[in-house]
Image (tube, rainbow, N blue to C red; front, side, top):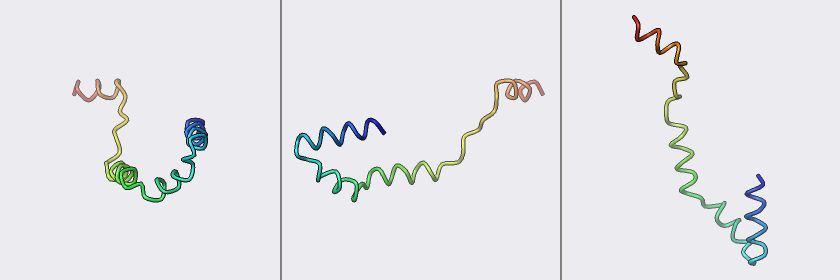
Length: 57
């Protein structure tokens, strides 16, 4: 959150603080990235010991 606050502060100093609303309203790339992350299957959380036991079988 601190990064976002810092970015907004810089935009305000540059007089571009109104532009962040336009970017946030139509963030197609960000939305696509979120959708891609949601569609991926959950990653396996196997431990090294579990993998070793499976390979020993």
